[in-house]
Length: 255
Image (tube, rainbow, N blue to C red; front, side, top):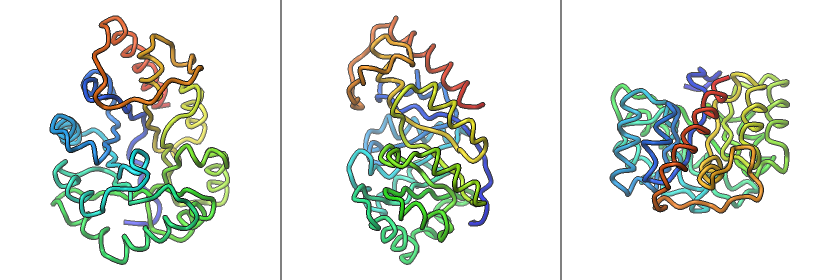
């Protein structure tokens, strides 16, 4: 592991309520599994089955939802329950500064990378780090053996795509994943596609939050409310609309 990442997949991972995993997340073969939601058996089973069937699967540490990651020992337990994942997101915190550098170094020094690598015979995960400041981004890009860098919405203040373009121009060995969308999903996908294989993919709940209101993906204003995993059932016509919009978005994400 380490060195230049083998780019295995490219796509969009839908973040949707539990009830619509099969209908909407199931349209993609690129998945984002949020670790702390795996307490729900149906949620865990869905991602276990999708990974087993060949979907490219990222195991997220839950920091976006919880402000801080679940304990790394719990993350390893979920990884094993899933039967593995293609990428494991290393623990991070939203505090920024240099806190995530410390968490990454602790992860490495305590041997957690090796524990994941040897946990399941025949499964060799890659690792993703998530900076919350420019200092952390530069450190992860230049001084670590992490395979992927995930850029969340908070890094948009620095221009996520601009940071990636600059890293590419300087010969980075990393690939990048965009965590979340903030505006027109179709335009976000187009911008990411311009960076070619340096972009692994994107994940977001925004497309669901837009389309469940009967809107098209470019109708993202006013900005829709956040979702929870236990949302009530949609009308059949709305679900059909969501499916149609998701199919188009997923197709564009492979560009």
